[in-house]
Length: 417
Ligand SMILES: *[C@@H]1O[C@H](CO)[C@@H](O)[C@H](O)[C@H]1NC(C)=O
Ligand SMILES: *[C@@H]1O[C@H](CO)[C@@H](O)[C@H](O)[C@H]1NC(C)=O
Image (cartoon, rainbow, N blue to C red; front, side, top):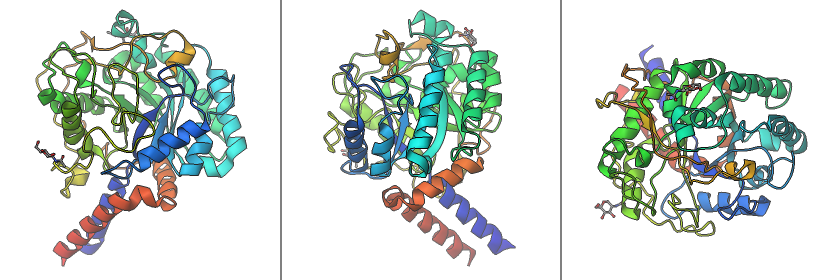
């Protein structure tokens, strides 16, 4: 009865804090050369061992194909197996290479088996394809995109490709900028997927007041608008961040201090609560640069990642997913972290596709509540199962999180008594 409910609540808090936490990893380096197994391994080890924090044990990828090959599986996979790093897989859907992406996915399953598939927390079919296909994406010269009907076809192909394999339970999603999600012409994609990947960059929202002090409210507003169209499906934070250096964008100033403020105000409340892949660990040579470390080999971040000034993640409000809707904005926009030159497939799989501040005119007015726990309740069983199997073998992932979960459970039980 009561004690059962209390236990259920306590367990749900434990489940909620077992969220994935990590970074985005491109298939190429800034200079265009490819990442190989050793490069991925170094990056995953660096993320796990960042000074002052812990738990960054998940990697989001943009493509299944190893750079320099036609359809060989990306070597991030053996690196992830070696480093016990969970994977949000990605298939690059624009540009007509889906057959090879799917071949690489199947080959990875055959080659690496369960040591690989147990690490998979989800599969994204595509990344920002709808943004690049949108009015603002075209205006920003963002590169090749695809329309929603082709994307739906690809999603179905991926589902069929994994059926009957050890990946058949994997949770399928798509990653896009938030104003692509709120564009109702794209709703057929939402119908076809298990979760929505949210990319948002207040730094690029130049048609609004977008100084660092507005960073959190712009981010929260965009997440709320995405949840409002998600039909109760989970919204995973697949890309966000603030640059440590680079040009100003509107009111936004790229600096280490501002990157830290954004980390503290936006990142810290997410970590451990909502699946989050930060943009990014390292991107030496990029401008703007979003890397929290200057180089891949350094575990010393450019600013304090400890969340010591963060208050919002420290209470038992874990399961209440407050989405503050309606900052009264007119005109939605999004940004994609993006350098400006997409010269083809190889460059675009780098993950920093082109296009920046996109001021869209589609003033999505709806500020309906739309939260209803979609962010923190892990409703899709397969994802939860996958992640728990990861966590059970991953002591690093649960070192900080579980301690909090256990504490929350203990507190609630204590109150009940
Ligand atoms: C909305 O989405 C459709 C389909 O992806 C796209 O063609 C259209 O340009 C988008 N609208 C805007 C304003 O970007
Ligand atoms: C907290 O904020 C203060 C003032 O901004 C700063 O000096 C300090 O380094 C911060 N501590 C952490 C752990 O972020």
